[in-house]
Image (cartoon, rainbow, N blue to C red; front, side, top):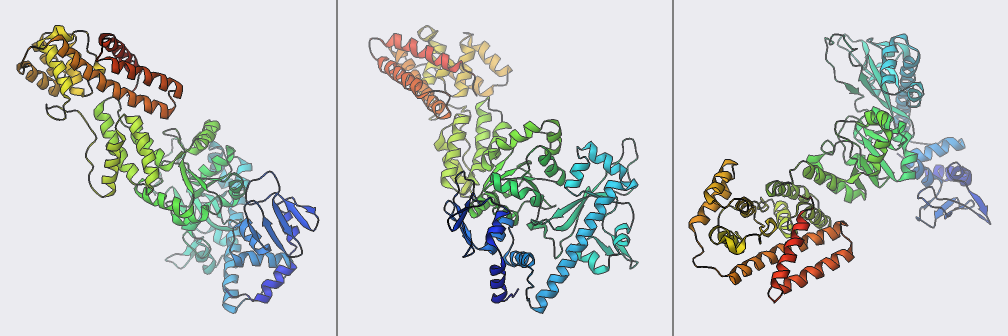
Length: 604
């Protein structure tokens, strides 16, 4: 849209930049300059300077700079033309635009004026119309009183075919151009919305550009309506309204968003209003569309922290890769508020506003939230459950494009599930290559290379030479779950046939099969006490090394202090060295007691 350089220069010259900026920032004169706190970043010591003679500003903190037009663009998030027009109107200057531009501008102004009149008419109908009593009652029941309705300019569309059209005498161009109505098959002008609560939608400068309408729910005890309509009905795309670029509530929320550096994204109009009521006046909502790139392009101009205040699955589980791409492209961080299951922000704001505020303050990064969903839904009490959780977690982690971020979450999941990080890394990379990852380790039922040999020897000893190992074995020595099941039953029952029956009865077929083979597969020779001690020493070394890895995880998670870890590791290693010496028997007892005490702590 062509505007002459002379007009632009005239607007710049006619604008008092100090007076303009003083509407947003408290400026104090210092010599030939004016200074104050920068409106574009948080600071306590003034670093924002204005030169009145040159009509320029500069911040020594964030390096924001420009002239009066730039300032209006940045503060109000307008494009160049709109900022220039606003300053021209302020200075009483008429811009000379080309004929086409002038015509388009006049048409746009007409549509904006029509929408403004419609919003005001709907609003007054809600406040005073006798037919709006049910709507007022419904809103009060949702915690929206008259003051709130006035602040958000809520309205009421009566249950009539053309009430708005007649009241404002709207022509066809105005109806269709704003989306407020249409011409029906009988060639009569008709309202688009009827019998609905109206939620006006404004652009960032506060101009009404669209409306959304919510149908009233049936009164308690009343019959279901004959016609079933959508709960919400919104304005269509028009020359003044683009759904994918518009965020409901941004006109009211932008100042607080800029101040806090955070924007909260909700699902609907009433959720936004509820957040404002809970003291979180930085909430917005999409207008009947999924969260998309255009929304991110808009939001990044206001804040770098974006909190999704609804289900992360609804936020785009299937489009998670897009969220990570938008994070990188627009340099924002996406978080998800952990709302209590079964509650929406509007309900929570009324019942427990402190919980709503806490959910936003404690929001988790998008990937972490998705992983928590996977892990919270899993059964981590068994090796099988942890393995299934690991398989699902690998798929979620693989979606993130950043190698370092993926590896951090691999470590976190490995600690949580008590699995080796390298196993997860291999699986994650397999998923990224489009391959099916090898499943995380589960129970091993057959004897072979993957079945720990010292543990098998210990079980054979327990079956064939019980006296050599009686009282010297504990569950922590058996890393394989099948072997551990067999040991735990044998430890309380020496009759093998009885043990096999017990295992079979409880459905532990793998353990029953292993024990049945151990009975007929003897040691091949008579073991001595030294032989038995050597087997037990091997088991203790393996169990101790596994537990030391657990201690490393406890250190990373903060469950143990560095000093406690250092003392524990030193003592355990000393006893492991003593196993083969004269103090071997005492070291065996100490290690067994330590392992038992460690395993006594509740953990998956």
